[in-house]
Length: 357
Picture (cartoon, helix red, strand yellow):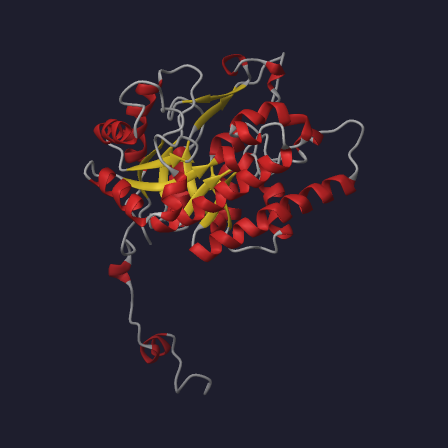
């Protein structure tokens, strides 16, 4: 058994225009002072992390790792959440997601998909140069507009949506396989991969590809009323990354799971800082220890109430307190009997060799 690593912090929600949030070194110094041991780095801010250089230059990757090491930090994973999103966008969402892409490919879905696909492939090469084994991303969505449909959906439509999603991702998964890196899809509403069933459907469509894995984020499962502890029991072999993100669902008589188009603060289901919501993190860390998860526990901070710096400061200690140093022996080893087969057969009153009775 191995003790999982942490605490780590996902930088996306903290990158800003002013120091220390506008450079990787500034963010590293800030995170280390809070007690973090690793950074999950998004790939959509070239001034923070230059993905194109990282994919082709070992020198650049060594410089990045060396810069972080002076603060006692490692990289947990790179993230291409926004780029992964753009690998598959339904036309209904073109305008909403165009802003995630560079100006040169906006308004052209084919070019935007090709750009996003290349970016995620670059992340595979960069991850390998950085010595990483897992990568965080989104799947994108072709079927999402047909969630909970009326009139009832056409089964062929969903079949083709997942087949196309698999066609787009299979070459990317193969590139990650060549580099020895797992693709960890964050199961998230708005993505075609948003729960266990949709992940299974996609996994089957990519022929159980060994690099098709899961970023476990209990907040998104909780707000869908999914048993996130049982989810670990079912999918632990595919869980290769972990976001520590809290949430709460407060039933009321006016709105429900879908939120009523309200702001997060007014929804029945909303995100909270770790420890302020309803997620059973003691149960989660216990399950992950039981199943020998050896990756990072990474704070993803999105709270509708608490200040971000406060959430980051509290989050490091929260994760640290929840990490279970796994035992190297069973507590009742002292009472174990003989490991000699002849001895235990004698204890059972059996004579002769095995099979002679």
